[in-house]
Length: 127
Image (tube, rainbow, N blue to C red; front, side, top):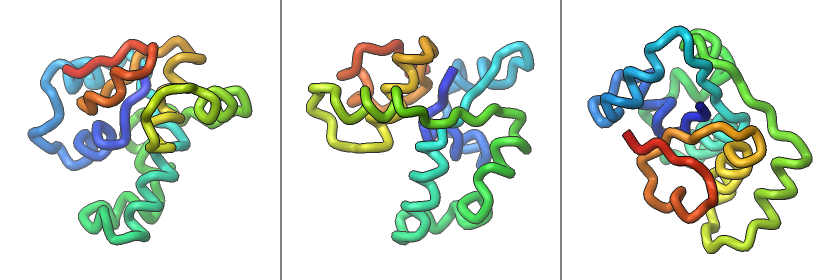
């Protein structure tokens, strides 16, 4: 499963907004959890812009936190970038578009509570 950026941050901060079903899935050591390079980009960008001040400890070294959480990073490929940019879907957020493209091409569900992600032809686990 790929996890949306907010799911990753909620996991790290033990935020009560993390849906119980998603949390239980993530706790299972038999499940591989992926954090996209798009989420690393999003956290660093939003922190720099002052939109994630609470994530200072994470934003300065996101890859370290992915490893510390026991998750796998998912690199962005040219194929992911092509689909993300070409999809004729009215969703403008480049981070979300990339997560959806990765979910589709890697055939992995995406854990997200963002209703807009259901615009994409992917499996979204909303908890």
